[in-house]
Amino acid sequence: MAAPGSPIPVGKGPSGIATGDLNRDGKPDLVAAVGGTSALAILLGDGRGSFSPAPGAPLPAASAPHLVEIGDLDRDGKPDLVATGHDSHGVFVWLDVRARSRSTTWIGTGRGTSSSGRATA
Image 1 (cartoon, rainbow, N blue to C red):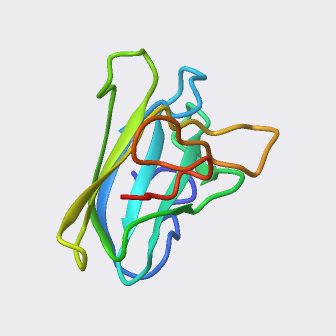
Image 2: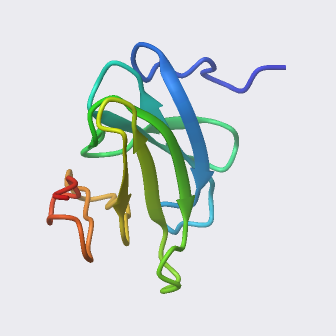
C-alpha cells in the first residue's frame, strides 16, 4: 500500500533521496536531488508516512545535484547534508542544516556555506 499523498511531487527527474530528521522533531524527513535544477527538495515528515514541502524549500544547491546524503559530518549532533554536483563534478556540504518551522529560511553554518545554505566553494 502506498503512503498517503504518494507519489510526492518534487520536480522533474529526482535522482537521489535521503532520509533524516532535519528539523529535529523526531520524525523522518526527506531530501531529494531534483535533476535538471540547482535545488534540493526538502520534505518534512509528519511521522505517519505523509510529507510536505518545508518552509523555504527548495534548498539552493549545486548545478544539477545528483546524489544526496544526510549525516552528522562534524559530530555536533546536528544534521548535515552532502550532495554531488553532476555538472560541476564536485561534492557540496551544508553543515548544521535545519528546517525552521516558523521561517522561510534554510540555514547552513560552518566552512563552505553562506547564511542561506548556498555553497560558496
